[in-house]
Length: 171
Image (tube, rainbow, N blue to C red; front, side, top):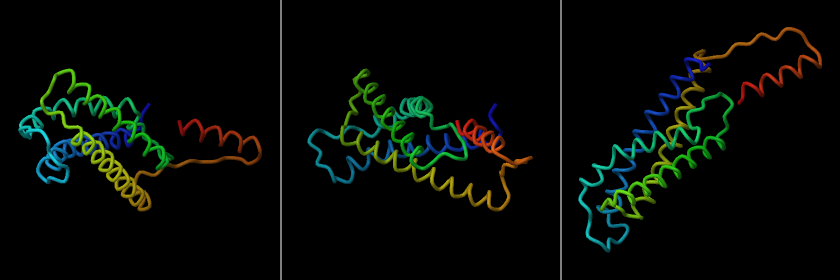
């Protein structure tokens, strides 16, 4: 059973992930074609094509992020684990978007925009996650969303049971 605070946190992360994915998708188009940082050799696709594919990108993002375990919330998750999860989710999303673009023969198929999208998405999500966890840590130091435990007894058996309980809670 999920705790209510974990569910709220998972929804919080989902909303931010989708918002940042949408901003990255649109931003990648404008970075690619409006800034001229990367030379454009083909005719520039219309911005409408980018906006038109946004709902599909967001649906694929939900699937990719869920499949890579980004919404399994627990207090002891390390930064490295979260970074790997976000990178896996972003990579899977990029592959799914490229496959969908190839399958539908969408005229908006810029490799440079896709690379920019992937980098912007991963960077944005990691930044939002780190900021969120810092805010949560600050709130917990103020007494919000704390876990309480009672330890009764001492000795080797209790220590072993405590380690097993923490390991089980960590999964």
